[in-house]
Image (tube, rainbow, N blue to C red; front, side, top):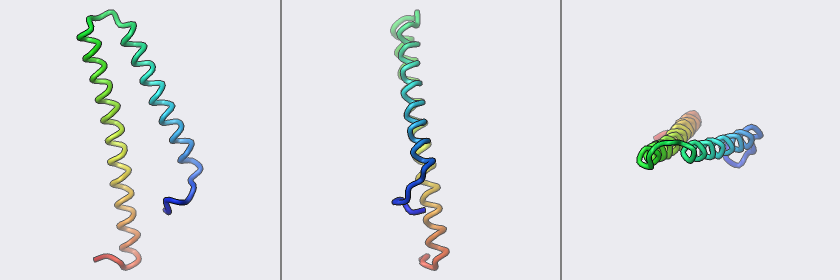
Amino acid sequence: MNPNEENNGAYGFLVFAWLQLAIAITMMIIGLWTLKEPLMVKGYYFITSVLLVGGSITAMKATYDYNRHKAYRERVASRGFEN
């Protein structure tokens, strides 16, 4: 797969993913704002949510990079350029 080639489905998925993230963060903020608990509890929920979002993005990026690197190595090996 050439990085310069266009993939029609990739752009739609990218928009969907960012839209879903924005909706989830908005709903989390609304939920924390209306929660009838002490500020300490709201802070705990907020930090946990931020870590979950960050962890999800990191896991997705690491998986993508691993699979892309694996596909690249297989393509190079099939051409006979392996060391």
